[in-house]
Amino acid sequence: MPISNFPKGFSSGLNVRGFPILNTYGGDVFWVDSGAGSNGNKGTFDRPWATIDYAIGRCTASNSDMIMVKAGHAETLAANITMDVIGVQVIGLGRGTLRPTITVGAFDGTVAMTDANSVIANIRFVLEDTDDTVASAITITADGCVVDGCETVVHAMAQFTTHLTATDAQFVEITNNKFRSLHTASSTSGIVVDGCDDLLMDNNSVDGHFTEHALDNTTPGSADEILRATITNNLFMNRSTTAGDMCVELDAAATGFFAYNQLVGGLATTAANYDIGNMATLESYISDSVGVDVASIIIGTAAV
Image: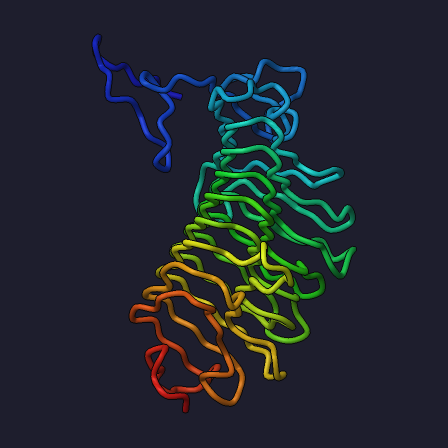
């Protein structure tokens, strides 16, 4: 691989998917690659480790250490990947199907973001056909975590019950992700966010048949609403036609901005497909016509 030389005094750093990794970056950078790696290696570019969880265990808390996962990396979970080091960042390289791929199914595993300020980006999640349901691709229980550019892939036989679940975690950012389920007999929910105040959710696409909601914030209890949230530029679709299976349902006390989102539900009237609680709505649209060429209306317009 050719080496890039930077002139003496170069100080602007280098970004990969918006994350700085050279010169001005103070954390350690480690490498993972299943194709050429071994957990007996040193975690360098030329001698990468084989698994993400092993790499996380080599990181230093609050040092913003970064784990670069090479394009083509693949691992099947036999245990959870637990992001239990404060500030660790797992960054996948590659595009399309060359992005790092995590397979779950026989073991009902998850990426568990349990320590604050963790980041996971550009990772694909696929399901085996050995297990009909997997609880959640990603679970967040710590403040300041970021999930960016990740994807769950539709499987003909297996399902994620919920694609991403965040619980009692403040300042979470869920951005640029794509979560997909089958169009019939599918997942329970797409994204669940309970008790996640100051949430940022932007530019996600969630599409499937959900027996609850594509976006769900409805766990009972006064502490479980989302306060001061910013939910913008997302596409949410629930293909279920069963009463109560909504596209978006938020706690009645939810607050913040709900702006420039596009919603499609399978229920008979537009009003039946969403409830955004007490959030301020700005130019978001709703349609009750899955698969039908019918214009949507701005949320807040009289139901049709």
